[in-house]
Image (cartoon, rainbow, N blue to C red; front, side, top):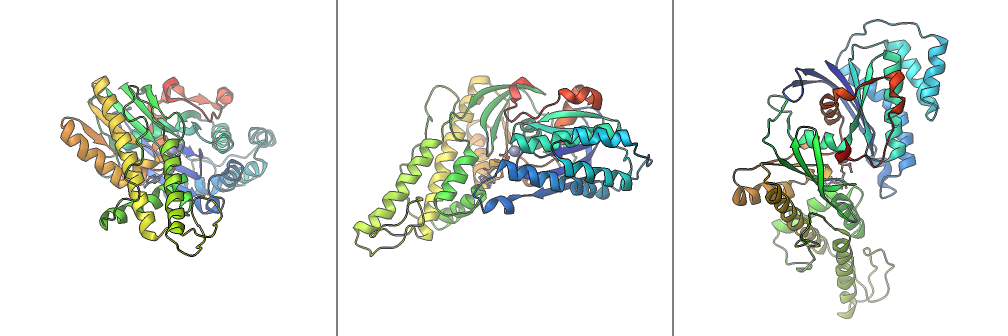
Length: 419
Ligand code: KG4
Ligand code: ZN
C-alpha cells in the first residue's frame, strides 16, 4: 500500500510517500519520497508564526512539495487522463479558498497524470486552523482527482508514532509493552497521555497555561534570541553547563511539581525568568554602571541599567532548562507510577532537545530500569509528514472517498482522546 501524506499544521509544508508492507502495527515501511519546506525564515522576522502568512505559504508551496516527493519516489504515472471541464469546476469548488492552488494543481495534473498512490493521509488537527485547511482541502482535491480515499490524521498521534519509529534500522514501529505513558511536548502542547493499547489515548494531564515549547520561545525572545527559541536556548544552556557558570538565578520555581494531579503550568516560570532578568539589569544600575541600554525584558533602557552579558544568557538558559527538566521528569514519573506504565514515549518538537532527552533516559534508568524511554530519531522530532503517513496507516478504517470526505474538517483543537 502506498500512502501519500500531507502536513501543514504549523510552519512546515511537508509531503511524503511511504509504502507499507503488512498491517499496522507490524508493518514494515519504506520511505519512497519526502519533501519538507520550512517557513521559519519567513516567520522569524515577526517573532512567531502568523496563521494567515502560514496559510499563504502552504498554498504557494504544496504543489512543488508534492512534485518533489513524487519525483524522489520516481513514481511512474499510470496514465494521463484528460481533465473534463466539469472536473476543473469541481476542483475550483473544493479549493475555493485557495484559488491559485486549484490552477497550480490542474497544470500539475496535466503534466504528471495520476501516480499509483493508494490513499492520502492528511493532518486535520490540532494546529493553526487556516494552515490546516490548506492541507485538508488539497487532500480532498487530490482524492477527487485521483479517485482514491483520504484519511484525516491527528498530528499528535503522528508525534507519538514518530517516537517509536525506527527509521534507521528496520523501518518498523518498535513493539512496545502497554500501558504506555506518552509525554507530548511541542509549541502548542504539553500533555501526558495514557495509552492502553495502539490507537487508544486518554489524556491524564496537561498544561493549564503555556506549552513547554511556548515557554522556550518566550524566554528566548526575552533575551533577544530569534524564533523558534527552543534550539537557541538549548545551545546556550549547553554552553552554560560546559563552562560551569554560577547560577543566574538558583531558585527559579518548578511550578506544580508537587501538585497531586498530572497537570503542568509554565507561565509562572516564564514570569520568574522575566523578573530575574529585570533584577539583574537594574542591579547593574545600582552598582553604579553608567547607563547601558537594556536589550532584554522588553523595556526601554533607563539610565543605570545594564545589558545581560553572554554569560548571563548562558547561565539563565541553563537554569531555565533545569527547571523545565525537573517538572517534566517528576510529572512523567508520577503518571508512570499511577498507571503502572511499562513504556515511556516522548514526542513533539521539544523532544529535539538532547539535554532533556538524555536526562529523562538517565533518570528512568535509575528509578525504573525496566522501562524504556523512547524519543524520536532527530529527523522526526519536529513537524514532518513521515509521521503523518504512520498515523494514517494506523487509521485506515477512517478512510473516506472524495464524495464522502466532505465531513472531514480542519480542527485546530482536535483532541487525541477523541480519536
Ligand atoms: O512539534 P513542533 O515542531 O510544532 C508544533 O506542533 O508545535 O514543535 C515546535 C516547538 C517550538 O516551540 C520549538 O521552540 C520547540 O518545539 N523546540 C525545542 C527544540 N527544538 C524545537 N524546544 C527545546 N529544545 C529544542 N532543541
Ligand atoms: Zn508538532
